[in-house]
Amino acid sequence: MRFEKIGSVGSQRMLSKKPPTDLAGRCTPAHLFARVPERSTAAVVITWEQIEARKQRLDELARGLMKEAAILDQHDDSLLRVEREAYIKAIRDALASVETARVVLAHATQRVAREGRQG
Image 1: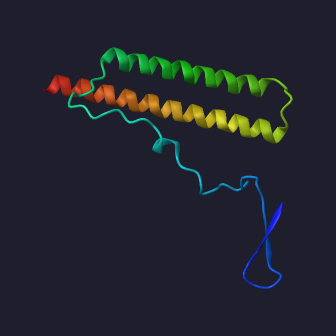
Image 2: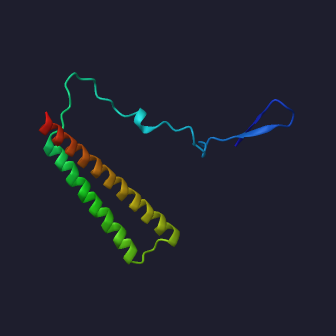
Image 3: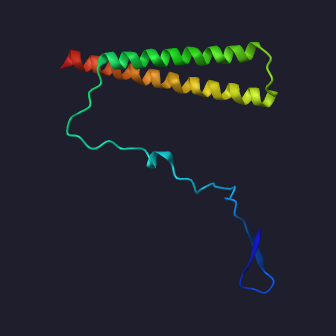
């Protein structure tokens, strides 16, 4: 540790070679470093097969999350009560998000199907 004098007499602060432990507000969001594809004039088209595959993956993910929540509800484990409750809450929040994504996809496919029949 080193000390550095600050303006007034007797005022000193410690200088450390360790990085600061409180990094709140100093982090750069990961999306700012994400690689952005070069702009193209071609439109990206998502096929019905890709949409159906996405819906199937969301269904599988939802089933896996439901299974995880059921296993935790039925069995004792080495987690503390508070940890178990936080984990189950996180699993249920993730499940709710997956279900929301699935419903959004379903509504979008219904809308496109309606527009296809009308147009």
